[in-house]
Image (cartoon, rainbow, N blue to C red; front, side, top):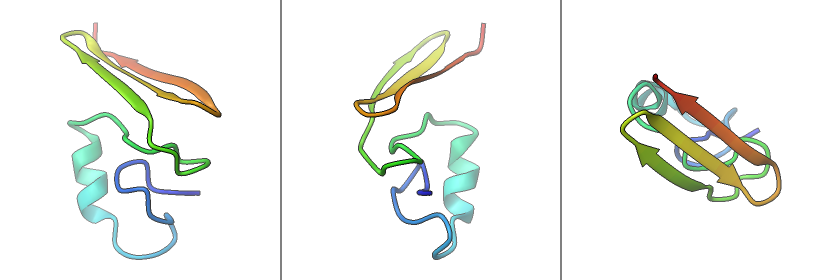
Length: 61
């Protein structure tokens, strides 16, 4: 598993900054394969898509 914010292995290092940023920003890396995701931010939320694992979304509406 990888950090969805910085892309580094989740079990290594301190990801406190990543966790706090996760509240305000969409994920940038796939937590399963570490691929950079295609992210679209809209006024109603965001969508993020990994080429291998598909889409995630967070709509605040």
